[in-house]
Length: 413
Image (cartoon, rainbow, N blue to C red; front, side, top):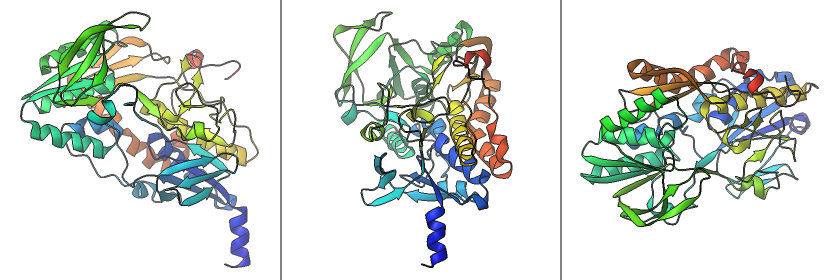
């Protein structure tokens, strides 16, 4: 190694991004496309596999519909960002290093933590061993193969949130020979306005999905699930007297958990293990660490953000812009984001789109039917167009709804 090369390596500013989901990939593309060659910044994106997990379509893959093979290195082409394949096995926040596959060590000057979340199968006995999840394209394909070989029987989808609704709808439409039961504490579409919620419920009825609201799965067996019921407004649950539901296949979509790596590294986390951030998305305990997407507990005027693609991508872009501002001697600006819609597919030929206030409460306006299907598909395909524009015009990525008075915290503007 020449003396000049050693000097260049010593003066290179190293930004390491952990996780290549919607938030992490947005951070990598935005930062790598904005940085100037003279600034000598190396952007490294770390992910366990080269295939991008298109989470917005995993419910489709679970029903047997093939997904595109999207390559992360190909998505990074032309940006100058480097891709490092491997599992993140440890973060040393004091030494500013990341361990990959227990054998490689990556030092960093700034870390962007975007490891996201997975289905929480740890809280209920048997879920880890007997329930399928949609944590990856491979998981969805394993489920699709199981459903294709089932012939007849019952599929229990646990969790009446939007992932559960989309999954139950897709499976029921593609496999009319199967009985699909949707189990959850809340009513499907509970956060929608009454008309949108009624439309969603009618669509589930039309598809033959049997809905059991106000129940909670307390144990999963190889051929059934045990329930508790009578959920009151405070969230407490009384036993249902040993009631069980027969289920040949169980899909778990109830709740998420994040990697324990952040807590193990000594970063300040909330009760769910998410990194607590300041207004600029920096860790409150380690400001050289930015947290984005589902891995971060980001407070806005309306409360802590919940994980969605619509909010995740802006957090990645904001982190990238903030890192550059700090490198150029400027203060990062506060992050602000307001929700604007909740699109839900109901099989391939129906959907409902609930438009929202910035705090995610429902507006009166909603779409249904074919126009909602087209809207939903446009949203699902939007990341590719957004990343393509960022490569040509990096500043185009920094536009999203700020939310006005709904998102203002303290003196933030």
